[in-house]
Image 1 (cartoon, helix red, strand yellow):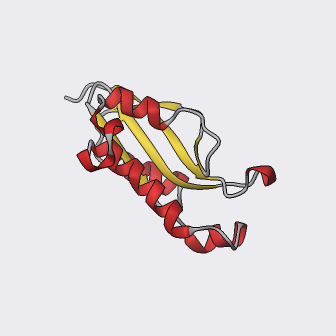
Image 2 (cartoon, rainbow, N blue to C red):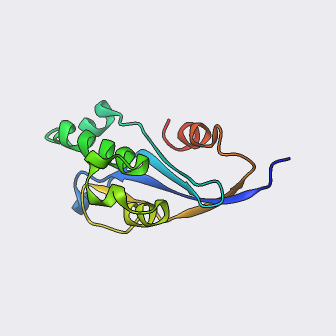
Length: 127
């Protein structure tokens, strides 16, 4: 029998022009301490982003979002942040910032297993 575990998640938003206060969801980061789980799912709708800001550097935005996934995985090529503990990586990724990629406030949930959790959040928040 699986024991329920709490998890935290944040939505990654692309904010191409802060002064216009427009954003679009482009990723989700999930952390579950009890299950030792940290993962991100990225879904960048390039056409929609280009509609918000035609001059946006799509490649740069994509690189920044993919870096989040690599940090979650602990990929050594992702730099020193990827070498921190899962908890430290999650908190670094969801800290407020004023760059083109911004996290939402952290939300909490409960799960029995992490299988499929990222898929459900992607479908709910990124589609």
